Image (tube, rainbow, N blue to C red; front, side):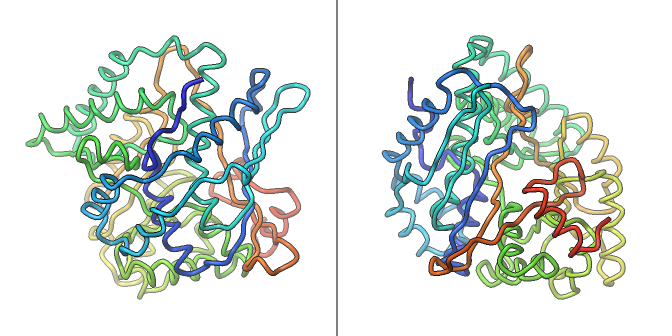
Length: 401
């Protein structure tokens, strides 16, 4: 089996930006993560062992000077001390456990210091996705020329419709080679359409951003708010996350992912000072149009013109949905779009993996004798993640029926 992840920056930018914020604010915190396959997939025999072999191979993957120089040039908001940390960082396969039950369902868990395990999630998901297609034989269906051609058509439609958009498809891509073909094709098509109303902003994958001289895109994920909620409770988790984030980045990376515990509690936490400081919000669950209305009304209630604020839509988008949202949102805000598997796993006869890894427990320091469980509650009620007792406790705390 070939090594699937060979580059340290073959990862989403938000894992690095969050890692930096974690070290800055919660350097002694320990966490647990758990894998969920929403399709309850039966994996091939030996899959867990093959996955652990790939995780072991990560121990040889280190950041290069070229990668550091690129990130310093493109990500000047990241403090330079963080690159010293990355130079010394080594993946530790002992932090990952994987097994299969008698039917073949997959279980994966991480445990360790938050500042270390935070860099496992995206890489392990990408490994699981690509490894599944290799071991089932579906990888034989991948035609990279066709993937590039479809990507070019999507880019042309998005850019022609005035959409500002980015690739966010690392976690559930069909393969490294497929994402490479997609990003390369979109970059080339965008270069040929520089006078068109839209633009290909970049990619969340730092390695491909470096390869094609694009802008790496990303800020934070739900795990930041989930961990804080586990330590301090969900009522003020958004406020504490905003405060920690703004302390680390001083107004840069100012797009907040607000839906970890739903719109209502976030809106109560989103005060005028932070609404002015942050450039905008990211919609990642619920009905996109309803969420847009709520965001616009919130800014207006604070005396802020919503047309000056960015709203990034990243909730299960494809090209058609993005173009329709562009038409509906233009003039009301500054819309942009992050699209994942519709770009990096759009292959005839191949079903994208519906998999996630979520932070499920946290303790503020290694000296504590117990973990506190946490969960994620989004605007999509069927996508709550966490054990049922914790979900119920958080719902009760947040007065959600």
